[in-house]
Structure formats: structure tokens, C-alpha cells
Amino acid sequence: MYAVVKTGGKQYRVSKDDKIMVEAIKAEAGSIVYLDNVMLLDNDGNLTVGTPTIQGAIVSAEVIKKARGPKLIIFRRKRRKNHRRIRGHRQDLTLLKILDISPEGKPKAPANKKTKVDVAGKVKPQKIADKKPVAKKPVAKKTVAKKTTAKKTTAKKTTTKK
Figure 1: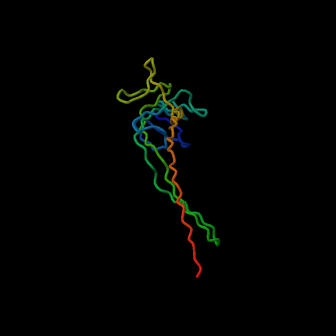
Figure 2: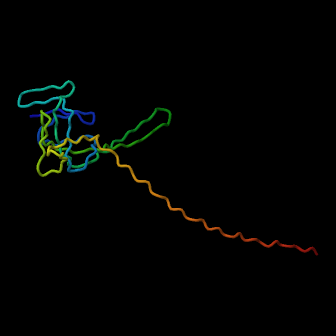
Figure 3: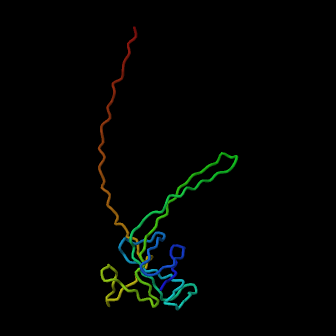
């Protein structure tokens, strides 16, 4: 069984226990993410093609680690103009291990992994974009009274004529 999933603008052919490097995903190492953009699904010879995606199909994967890609050098120049610009780039990446491919949308959760479970005991698929940023509490500023100092007066110099 294999599937073609789309994440980070790219498509990956995955099967169970595969490890793939994808663009950065907002999830911690050891957590489980669910990829629901399944474009194609092969279930033991039964091929299903999505239009553009297959409704209900989910691929569950475990985040192994976060990494960065190799450094790329971008060099631009214009001839006869003495114009040169150099920039570097390193892409943020996430290493995923595919745990399960589910055509019905019922992901199997491993017993030893921490996942979100709802009240009825069913595993909740956690989407990556559902996380809300935590607002910081405003901090009260302490006011410090300014100390005033008396100005020193200088004595005028008197000159005597001879």
C-alpha cells in the first residue's frame, strides 16, 4: 500500500515505515501529525486517484526531528556595471516517519505515543494550522521617581584695572 501526499507545495510517494524530509511543519519532535492532502492511493492493486484529493484519506506520521538543509549561495551580477550581490539560504526541514495510511480517515494511533484523545476515547486528528498563538500578558512597568539635584552657581570673576 502506498500513497501520494502533498505537503509544503511538493508531492511525496510514501508507504508505511518510510522516512521523508519535508518543509518545516509546526510540531514538536515525537508528536504525530496527520497529512490529509492525499492525491493518490494504492490499496493492494486498487488504485484511487483524487480530484484533486481523496476525501477521508489520512496519512499519519511521526515527527522525528527538525533540521536545516544545505547552505545555498545566490550570486547575482550585472555585466559591465560593477554590480554584485551575494545572499545565502538554508531551508528549514522536518523529518517524518510514516506510521499508517488510512483510506477511510480513521488513523491508527500507536499505544506508546502521546496523541490527543477526545472524551469518547477516539483519537482526534490534530491539524497543524489549528494551533493558536498564545497571547502574552502585559507587564506592568515600574516607575522610578527622578532625583532632582540643585545646580551649582559659579562665582563671577572680578577683574581689577591697574
